[in-house]
Length: 187
Image (cartoon, rainbow, N blue to C red; front, top):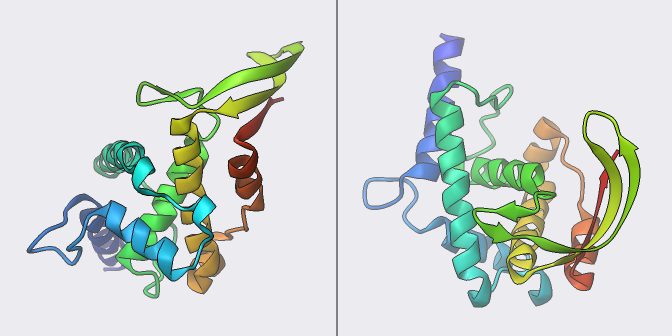
């Protein structure tokens, strides 16, 4: 019975993310939920997803939805112990945050270049090249980091989510957005 309930909760989360519209508890687009959340949290405008970021953010959300669907149907999605205080909208922000964390250092995302390398220091190789690099964010990369920041703030400010998933504040994202740079270390 517990396993059935856990699967039902997972299904409710994923269906909220995947299906919006008339017969869904989610009536707006996921982009609209993000815009509303950043406004409610009073995030400074320079860190917000804006109209100029919309196309990029919608593409990122589409790729996220594909990934979540694949993981769910492959039974490769683990949400830990169910917490009834975390609603579907909240879980959307958490799963999107985790997805963005996972792909943050990718050099490209959905055929879009995330950053251009400025400098690189190599340390040899050990199962792959070991290096530190300094990189300049492209416009797509800047949109990505803004979305990453908004989702991180949403999760950090949600008390139950912080308790359930050990969310930390991601102040480094503000610096990356301000400087339009990202440092990557593969050690």
